[in-house]
Length: 375
Image 1: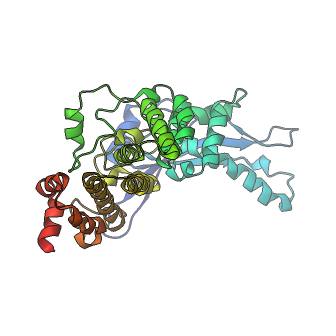
Image 2 (image 1 turned 30 degrees about the horizontal axis):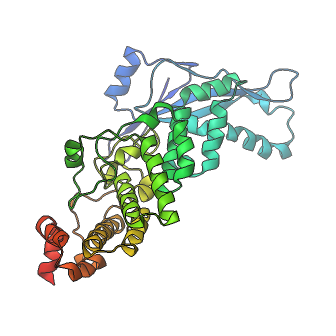
């Protein structure tokens, strides 16, 4: 174990350690040293690259074995390439050799060492990881990579189902979630098709006493509703309920547990807890807005119109926050209040002041009362 540190005048030293041993075992003495020095970064030798006598191809050898968890540290993987790898090697082939062994810690295998949310933005990467995890004839090095990977095949199928669902590809999302094991049977505390004037996740969960929806049951019901909209069957009701479902699947809704997993993340209390890689699609109101607009186009009564327009106003409000507040990682709660003039649906809603739903909105929605007072 080797100690590194660096500092600037007037600043506290940043101390890191380098582990060279084949077995990572942070015993009491090592753990105490790391804690006392407030160590955050560890340079860990993952394997050597060596070439046996008489062989032309160099290979990873002596991979590290982790006997202790190291998730609390920033791990910098280190590869040691032995001198004889370069012996009798033409200088023109060195760039290709360097590229070959740098790939040992790229793409799929790299993700096994240190997770990077950007890896999951490309479905080809996810498919490659799925293939890797199902590989039967793994080398010792590949077995090491798999053992370090903190996710499993179910996590990957679940993530693919999440992305497909939020992109309104419900039919494709269903088989992915079906392959995610118990994740597909996760139950929601509230009704994903119900909404209220004021968003209140806890209220929805407390009040709902019906049969719980699971991910799979929800998706299959949404697929049925989408088929009804496409064939013109009770378009208003089906489109409105689909709008509610997509609203509730977002960060703002009562069913946002849908996206909680090992990849997008397992926290939901604030948008700060969402990685920027996933934030846009988890906060987006685009799909919900589309279905509320379809419902509005199919309305018959003024009460129906008032309800659709109000839900569109909520989507506009949320998108304002997405654009002006939640797009940064350093905001604090209520750091900015929505510009009510930017909510065009509030202006439309004034045309339905004679409806019962309008009166309920006026009573319960502080945003709308402020709008009316200012106009």
